[in-house]
Length: 133
Image: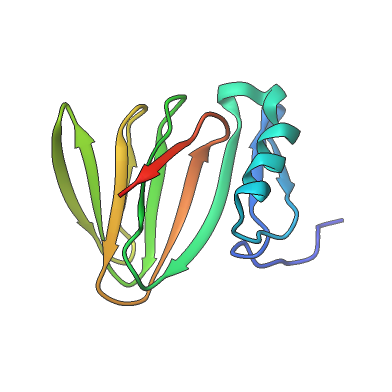
């Protein structure tokens, strides 16, 4: 029997070993949510992926990096300007609805928006680090 429909923006999904997909606890945006997620799925190592949807209307206030794998960024509504720090230089790409980009492993990145934007992220499940923008 199929699972009941749910809002991916409220309940992210973990893609794990053995081609599993697990609906997670409701996302509350806190660092503790991410800590609980990482602790619960550490056994999947670098193969685990977090699938999440985020909507925002202001620029990010941090940079982040995923040292253990590539991250898929897929814009589904609005426009976002993704900034990637590559070899000491910042590369900028603008994404509109239906467009995607990949953050390579170890690439610091942040984003700007001019208005409401909704994006799907498929992120390595371990090792994410943030720093102030």
